[in-house]
Image (cartoon, rainbow, N blue to C red; front, side, top):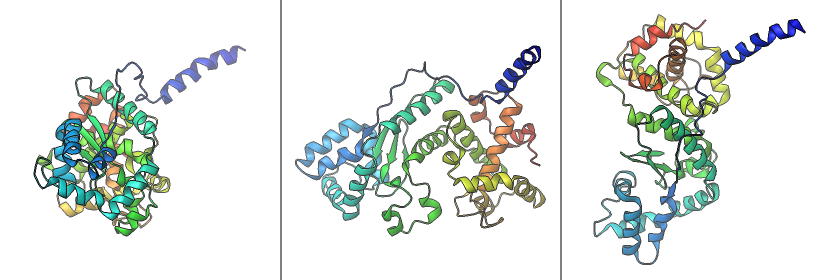
Length: 334
C-alpha cells in the first residue's frame, strides 16, 4: 500500500505533463454564432418580383452582399439596372441548378457546422478578447473561392465542400490532391485559417523559404489553439498516411533543407516548391505530400511554444522575427 501511495504523485505529475496546454475552458465565453444561408436566400430572386427579392438580400446581408457579387460571382453592383438579368443567368445555369440540389442534400442541416465554428470562435475570443467576431454566411460561389473574407464577415462556399468524390469536381478537371480536401468536415479549419491569415498578415519585407515556412506554421498552430481536440490531418489537409510519412521522414527533410542551404533562399519558385499546394514535394519522393515545408514550419512553431510556455498566443501571432522563432525553438529533429 505504501508503494502505491508513493506512485500516486508521480502518476498525477505525468498526467499533468501530458495534458494539452491549449485545452482551455471556453464555456464561459459569451458567443452565439448564427450562420445565415445566403446560398439558399439568393435563389428567392430566381422567381417572383426580383426587385423586391434583391432589395431584401441587400438589407439582410449588407456590405457582404456587394462584395460577394462584385468579387466572387462577378455579377457587378447589385444596384446596377442590369444586375437582375445577370443574376438570373447565374442562378439558372445548369451546373448551378445541379449543385444547388447537391448542396441541399449535403448541407440540409448545418447545426453541427455551426456548433464547431462557434467553438472555434469561442477559443478565438478567449485568446483575443479585444477582437470582433465576424458574421458567417454560407454562399454558392460557382466553385470559386472556398472561403471569402471581408472586414467583418466570412462567406463559406458550400459548393466547394460537397465531398472528394463529387462528380462536379471531376468535370471541372480539379486534380485529386485538391479534391481530397473538399468535404464538409474540413470547413471549420479552413474558415479559422483564412480568418487568421486576414487578421495576422504575412510580413513580406524579408521573405525567404524559412519565413514562409514559419508563418504558415504559425497559422497551423493557431488552429491547434482554436481546435485543440481536432486531428492534425484536418488542419493541414493531409491524408493520415501522408501525415505519417512526414513524421517518419522529418529528420531527412530538415537535413535536406540544411545541406542544400535552402532555408534563406529567396527564389519564388523554390519557396512554392516546399510551401505551395501540390500532389507531392518534388525534392522528395512521390509518396511525400505537398507543402512539406509548411509541416516542418508547424513543428518548429510547436517546439518554440513548448520551450517558451510564457509566450501568449497573441505574442506568437504578432512575432515576425522568424529567425528568432527558429533559434529559440531549438528545433533539431533526430
